[in-house]
Image (cartoon, rainbow, N blue to C red):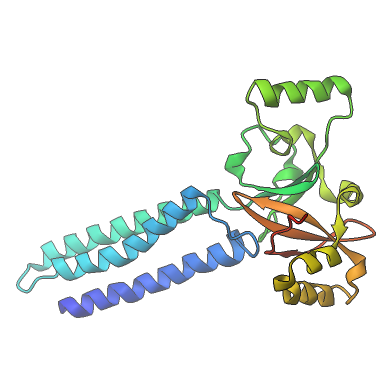
Length: 249
């Protein structure tokens, strides 16, 4: 096979592999608005992209005229193994870093991966993640004074994880969703504060009956970024997400 044809075939195969990886990442692992990649995810993406670009060049380089079939086959198999290993490792790292939990704590939602939660998750219901999007949970602030002081001491002086990262304080969101209304704000306030996001807000309102007064919002945190969680004003049930900065004065 000619060098140019071999390299072109390698590029086509790479495009197919990249399409599969992109589909998994964008629609299953990191759906909107959870498309924030942690540092490990960005490195994995760079590794996958580098393999897709550099290795076809190696295919072109090793496919020299006059090279024996056995030597060429060995080189091509080796290049293929390196590519599969690089893409598999990169995709697996992105899979591990994907948004797994969305935990409400105090006045906001926080997006966590499985790696972020170092304490054991003993309740199997808290691992029953949907196919796309995170599992939604509620972190209960300890009502007992002694337990509250213990949590405060552990976080402030012992360097232990804060409330959202502690599965022993979690509940299913549906059981406690009415409590988020204590901190939720009218969605109309966000629309006034973020006129650039008016079209997205209006579209979400239309999808939920067309009455903006029936919806409220709560800030969401993902890595160093923000997003908005829209909830029903009567129940606290989640009705949608916006990629809009929710922190207004």
